[in-house]
Length: 204
Image 1: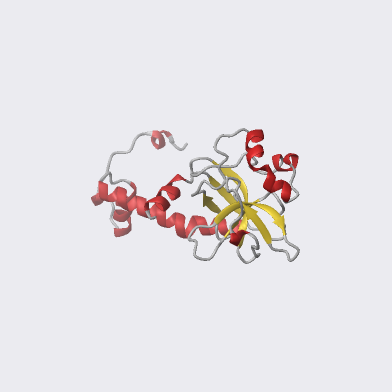
Image 2: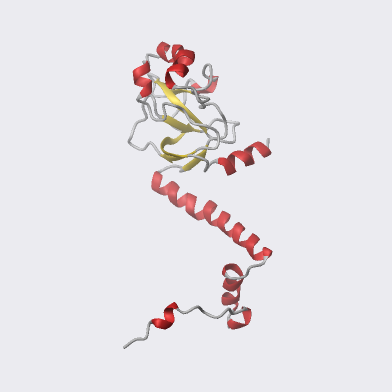
């Protein structure tokens, strides 16, 4: 009979000398060393693995270069207004674009979202984006993708967007081509975008 009890007994601490190979010593440094240098190396490895393995893998699965995006501006922030209050201040624009109050209320994230939030993005593929979707797209001379709501689909197949908190559209929002589009937001999480948001603000 196999004696399995020793599997659950604490192992004695061992150092570099316990590893006969260089690879073993490197693993000990990464996984077991408690010094600051090991900690820094661990952080760098996590960032590199995330940037060059995890994100590309999710990008392949979700058919987009940006499977995760952070909200770095307040252009979609309703500033804690109740929906009816927000609509009184902003509804005229949407009415002019044939979007009713009831229709807008049914849109994804109809109460907006704030700086520091994060989204999971899925490429459009064969799924056409529609009015009300949160579109993620690239704009020339802007380092971060835009994350705004579709307010119209043009006759030529391009899209129009607007930030919920913006009084009107930017010029670049009136004809967004499919080549610019990275996908649409399909899932949301609070706070997770703050590391990117803070980094963006520090670099401005």
